[in-house]
Image (tube, rainbow, N blue to C red; front, side, top):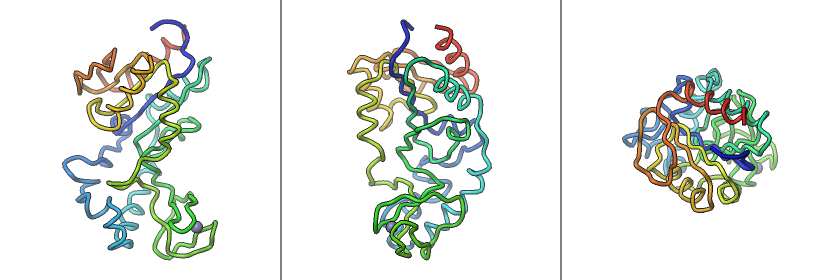
Length: 235
Ligand SMILES: [Zn+2]
């Protein structure tokens, strides 16, 4: 770990939210919070039965609304506030734990549970309340066109222009709680490495022999990340 970094990029995934008790919201074994992916997380499912898909995400909101950030989220927020260089956070998580920890400008590439996007005008609205097939868009006033702002399977990731720009300009890339061998993390570290960044992986156990990572730090992010942040801030 050399000099002061100018542009730090942190990518977070399901593992960091799991340490706040949110272990279920992930696509493992084709299940999405214990529902088959094709029932609740594809655009075809939404077109076929929008009421059902809206209900699924509405029912998930209270748990995510009540979840609290853990020491890993807080450490990243502290790094953003106190580090002399720029610190950007990209997350695959649809919860708002980074925001609750005080982080700003978090790029949610898989969307956010507390947002809906209007299929008529493209604008995003925020709500922790119920959004359904009768909800009126606050921007264009058209009813029945709101879709949960969750990236369904087969849809493009959000904010990717900004993400590409960040990956190409960062000099430190840190992946937290996400498998280093699965898209998009695998692609992100590869880009960052090709553009010259030093790269760290924080995970419960080693997920990869991905040679794009220079360092593999194993253990709970709530324990390993605060120490890492203290080292960065001490430089
Ligand atoms: Zn609209």
